[in-house]
Each structure stands twice: as C-alpha cells, then as structure tokens.
Image (cartoon, rainbow, N blue to C red):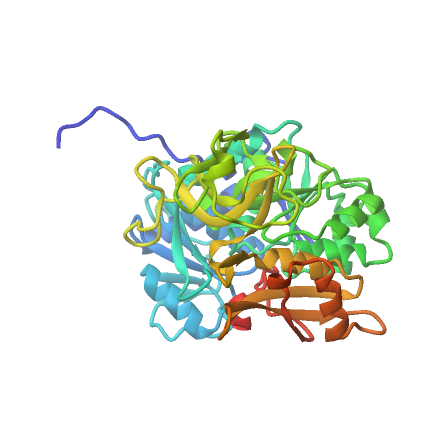
Length: 505
C-alpha cells in the first residue's frame, strides 16, 4: 500500500504533561504517602520500561489492584509502554479472573487476585521500580492505538471487553473541559473512591486528576466516616461518587461540616434518588451534578452541568461534542440535540411514562469521538459506519429539553402488549418513606405474558408490609403496572452500587 503521507497523531500522556507543568504539585495521596507529579512520572517511566522489556507492543496486561498508588503506576506505565491494560475487580473469583484473562489473551497479571487464577501466567503483585539500564525500549504510541479493555457486566451472558483507544479516553476529557464553569480544574483536590476497574473511577476519576494536573486522594475502600475524615483532612474540593456514597454521607452526624468545603459533587453510574440530592444540598449548599454514561463512551455522555445544575430527576443534556438522539422502535428520530422532531407526535410507539411532557420515550443513540471501537476482539457491536451507536437505554426529553432516563430496553416488561418500565415502579416504591430500596424485574405470567415483580428492602419501625406497599402503588400506578411484591433484607449490587437484576431473576 502506498504511503499516504499522513502521520498518526501521538497519544496524549497526561502524567508526563502534568509533570512538565506542575512537577512539585501533589499528584496522589494515599494514607501517609504523597507523590508529586514529578515523582509519579518517574515511577511511571520505570513501570513502562519494565513492562516493555517483558511484553510486546499491543499485548494485554491484566491489572488486578484496588485504588492504590500501585494501580496508578501500573496503569499509566502500561499505556506509556504501548500495551493494553485490562483492569479487573480484585474481588473477582478465580473463574471470573480466568474468563477475562483468557478472553483478552492477557500475557501478564499485575496484582494479587482474591482467588488465584488457574491460568499459568506470570503474576507480580506490583510493578518493580528497579530496572536494569536500557531495560525495555518504549515505542511511539498513537492516539488511535488501543489503550484499555474494560469488561462490561452486561444484562446477560459473559462480560465483554469494550475497546477504548487513547483518543477516546482523551476525547471525553476534551468534551468535559468545554463545560462552563469547569467541573474540575488544576487546583482541585479530588476524592478517588470509585473503583479504578470501572470506567467511571478510571477515566472520570483518576484520568481527570492526571488530565488537569490536580491532586487525587485515594480511598481503597469506601467507608462513609473514614472518607469524610479524608475530605476534611486534605481539603477535598471535588467528590466523584455513586448514589450509595452520597446516601451514606448524609446519614453521618458531621456530614454538613465535613462537606461544606466542596466545590463540585459529581454522581454517576446509577440513578440518584431526588430526596438524597435535596438533602445533600440542604447540608452543604452544593448541588450534586448528575452524569449519565456507559463504559463504551469512556464513559460520560450527558450531565446536568450543561443544563440545570440544581435540577433533580434529570440526566441533563449531551456534553459539548457529543451528538445524541432519541429514536423509536422503527428507527425514526423523535428528538435530537434539543430539537423535537416535527413528527414526534406520531413517530413513536405507544409508550406510557408518567410525567412525560416532552417527546415520547426513545432509545438513546449517540455519536462522538469518545465512543469505543467495538467489543474485543473483532470490534463487533461498535458504532456504525455513520458513527452512531445505540446505547440500549430509553429516555425522554422533558418540557425544559432535559433528558430523563427511563430504563434499559432489555428491562422492558410487556404486560398484555403494554410497555411497563421497571424504573417507573421503582420510583413509586422509593417514594415511600419506609422503603430503603426497591428493584423491579419482569417475570412470566400465564395470563398476561409478563408481570412486574418488585423486591423491596423495608425500613423504619414499623416496617411496611406487602399489603401496605400494594395500596401505596395502587394509588400511583395504572392497574396493569402494579407489581407483586417480595420483601428482602438487601439487594445484590455490583462494586459501584448497581443492582444486579440478573441475580434477582
């Protein structure tokens, strides 16, 4: 093939850039350990050379570490070496580790899995920081090169590896940086408590700190009282969190005092109850910024930071540089980038969602430079030739033009042919003052095809019974949406707080 003369753009190296701009600024704080950007950059270089000496460009390397300095050094070192990182949950079983390692073809494991993998691979607990002179020649890394495989849990079947390039990771930061006022800046101190094996903790958390040359305070395990002490001790100004974190914080007696210095509070990964957001604002004077995204989008797609920062119940609007449309089951666009389609009143299916005063609900379809390159290894399931990618999530635009997330397409329950969205029933149940949590799934029904079934964690004294909750729902839901109810002590959740509905089914 003749040379086109085009030179691929090099990948950004945020740690090297931060070290160049702010060498003496604290980069990471973990317990009593404080690393400046210059010190972190040196460790990353050592890690990159050590990795390059033992692997080939493009090799996959599994990282089975918590939110530690060792993870950060290994992660940025693998990227600098032109290898592909495969971050995995340290709490995975041996079988789960084996699946991801086998599927990705990883040649090296860095970390100490809870269940030792059965595969015969080289495993080290951390990247050694002592190397021989000239150990490992570093290649030129292109922006289009694969950077990371992130294994998504999915709604069924085995997890799949989403392929994200260096360019996709960087693009999401570029998009977030176009928001005014800025969500995160170089002088911020950011709490990093969301697990790094998740796209949200990895790129929105750790990646954002490096991108801005800010300071990250690591919390390997989330404990509400302990993290509030970290916030006070280190003058943390930004929290990157999930709903369970904010719910736990506002229940602590000294939460208001500890959180009063926050400039930005970000919440993602799962829906946030409006009551939690309201209480947090009352305690701190700061509104929680709600974000929506997916692993495949590196991960942020929309946020209330670009619409109404004080608004609850919405996921905001698309980031600058992200195109988004809602489409019906026939593929027609109902809404796009804030504009209601002239055919919206007749284009959509018969969908009944309480409170919709904008367009009909439709699947969220997105396009942007932050999207993944498909699933490992062949790139199937990625954006189409025109760059658009269907998320599988359903939303509608309210009267202000803000998006309201409804549910996953795969979660849709068909009762006698009528659409029932579990999230709507869950919101009703969560609105009961003595319900701690609720999750709704569809179950087979001989008469209606399917029916909604709710798992409810009761609270209070006395705790509500099934009959009381059924009366509560009957006053707020159409008859065909009424769920059968089962009381449980807890709901199965992932490491970032999402309910594992597959286990409930």
